[in-house]
Length: 231
Image (cartoon, rainbow, N blue to C red; front, side):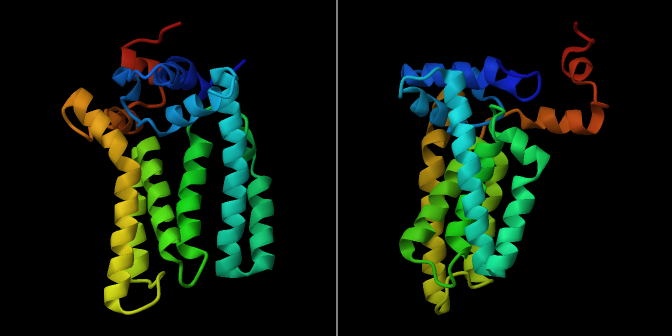
């Protein structure tokens, strides 16, 4: 039984989208503001024989474990083991993080993908080509989960080229940035193609309505979107 917070999105959007994906169908109306990254993960886990809601809970728990691991490895490489352990305790004690370990939604899954992409790219002074490619793939899947994950692409290229996350000469750094970009595109391309086929534009989404609500909504979701306070 879910709650009345983000899990309402699962009941009317992510759950039906995952159920359709299991059947090989795309219900494009359920992807109005986000891509298929999270519903695809839920659909994959549910194929193990569990309900969609239980699959969502499993995805959240695994994502939380992965996020904690990625954070520790990233901070250990950048700050040392002591501060890495302290930052891990801060994360594990955060009420929002704890709530999202069992609340079914895209938040924790997206968080784990972002941290995974950053950790693969930055945990080593000279990441190998596989790590760079993997970082790009996770970044592309993060974009397919929530469109604001796009920031990982320019951030990754900047880190490689300008901050020298990948050591070596300028030509080698640009090659590494190309590998990262290719990985990002590979992770994002399947959803971009699907979105283009169904809507005519690979970037079709209605996130502008969420921006409008943030600016003009006044905290009243029902009135802004539906014109009245529905009961």
